[in-house]
Length: 217
Image 1 (cartoon, rainbow, N blue to C red):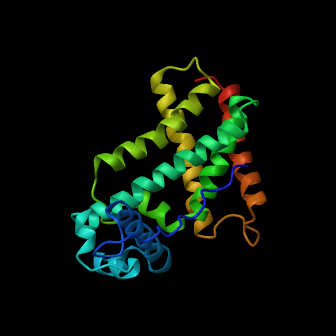
Image 2: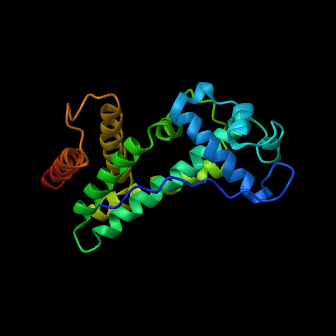
């Protein structure tokens, strides 16, 4: 099983009016924003507090972000990029196995990503997170979604596009729903170890895939 992406390190400060070069400032602000999300939630996140956490002037974030919405969109876009890498790692680890096993591994990594990045995961998919839609966010989310499409198609390459879309939705609903239930403490009662999470997710995805194979569309 692939490890989750390592936590971002605080960018090194460089000489400048706020102690950072232009390129490092953006990363420092994103890191500060993620820390606030994890500790206090999205409603506590303001650009002034982000600047304070990053150790820069309250006007510094305006160099990169026009609003709190575009700032949150960047955090979400980076979250989807991390999720995509996590899904890619799962397939790479199972490259010698059959497509169903690869899909199960991706499901496990999806859930692990959700539990390791609770606040960012909720930001990525929440309906009331004040995130502004940006091209970067849309493209990042689409890349993650395409990984799932490819994996589901590989299980049964002969299916048509309509059936593929239905199976992708069902598979996504399964692992995404499990992620939310796990975050709410509704599954893996008392023992939410990585091993138990993997076992339950694998059982669920495999049961679904087995049903598809036994029952043609």
